[in-house]
Each structure stands twice: as C-alpha cells, then as structure tokens.
Image (cartoon, rainbow, N blue to C red):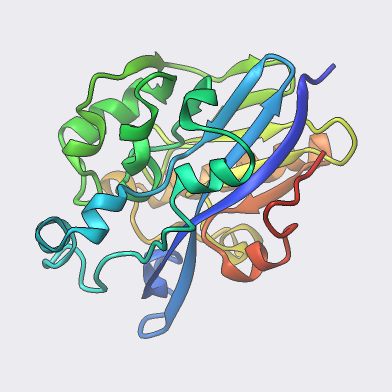
Amino acid sequence: MTQVKKFWPLLTGTHRYDKTLSTRGRGKGTIIEAPILAYLIETSNGRILYDVGCDYNKINNPTLRKHYYENEEFPFGPPEMTEEQRLENRLAALGLQPKDIDVVFVGHLHFDHGGGLKDMCHAEIHVHECEMQAASEPADGAYFADDFKGDYHWRLQSAEYDLIPGVRALESPGHTAGHMSMLIELPKGPPILLAGDAADLQENINDEVAPGLCWHNREELAVESIRKLKQIARETGAQIWPNHDIAFYRQCNPFPMHYE
C-alpha cells in the first residue's frame, strides 16, 4: 500500500528558449515558455522533493548572472524567478521550511533541476551515480559545478528502487547519462509518472521525439526511455507528466492545491 498522502507541483520559475532544445530537430525559430518545476511528495514517512529548480543567486546577482547565463552556452539568457517562486517561499506558503524536507531526489543535475541544492544541505540527496559522473566531467554546459559541490548528504544510486512504498525511481537515460524519472502512487487518484526531462513536452511523449540535448548525442537512448515510460504508464494506469510543458502545467491543480 502506498505511503503517499499528498502531492504538489511547485512552479519555481520559467525559461524562454528555442523549441529545438525540447524537441530534437523540430521547431527551430519557435520560442517557447517552459515552466521550471519541483514536486513535493508528502508521505507517512516524511517529505520528498523531486528536483529543486535553479539557484536564485545566479539569476538575481548581476555578476553571477553574467558569468553563468550571458554567454554562448545560453543564447536565450537566464530563466526568470520571482520572489514568490523561490522554492523556500513555495514551501513557506504550505507552512514548511527547507529543513522539513527529508529527501531530495534529483532527476538530473542540470542547473534548472539541481541549482537549489544549497538550501537543502540537511537532507539526503539522491542522484544516479552515472549522473554524478557526467556532471563532474561536465558532459555538457548545462551543468554548473558550483550547484553540486557543497557539503551534501549524497545517496548515489545505481539502479531502479523504491524510496518508500508508492514512490519508485525509474532509470530513463538519454537526455543525460543518469537521468531518472519517478512513479508516484496516490492514495485516491491514478498514479503520476514524472518524466523529468526524459520528456519536456507532451509532443515528446505522443510522437516519441527525443529532447534536443542528448548525452553523447544518444538520441536512440532517449527515445528508448520515452517508450519505456509509456509502457510503464500503460501497465500501471499512470499519467505521464511532461516536465517543461506550460500548457500541461496550466491544466494542473493551481498552487497551493494538491493531489491525493
């Protein structure tokens, strides 16, 4: 029986960029607005965060913003994050503080998923060991070494596993070397399958299109992961949630409403 009690999608910012970053070989010249999300899972055995968004200081501080975002790697500039959207303020709106989070599960370590780790030094940080290796190289320019070089309580993983009954980590490499998705069994509604960046948009799922950025250009690996998630969804009755689809996000329960 699942130990999940409640589930919230948390909007922590937005980023505007060329659609080809989400759909490989499709949409050149089309600028999309992408939500940057974290997901809070309240269970009978503590609280889990899937992803932690960006580092606010790198966006808000002009010197840091110039160093990290105003360069050739980021032709579309930095994400936008309001004070309200900062993760600590989202948690505060629910009567929580960062210290109330027991486990942070990072689907992958790109800047818009692992940037907020500095606020979570107390928690267990789960990430795939292949992801940590790729981030440390770094395998691409979306890894900011400063984001994950802190004094963290790492719990490196090497396979799929259950964090608790009702919350399962799923290997879904392709976008990055150690990307992981998550299957969440709700107490009442159908399961939710968080794709992470295995599928930015509903289009990635429907048409089995790889994300624009693929680890070592392994497009076939990314498509294989999309097909795997779709198969799991068929077997479990889960709904796959794309991670950077603003139209999909706007259909979700508005914050601070939750799912159960």
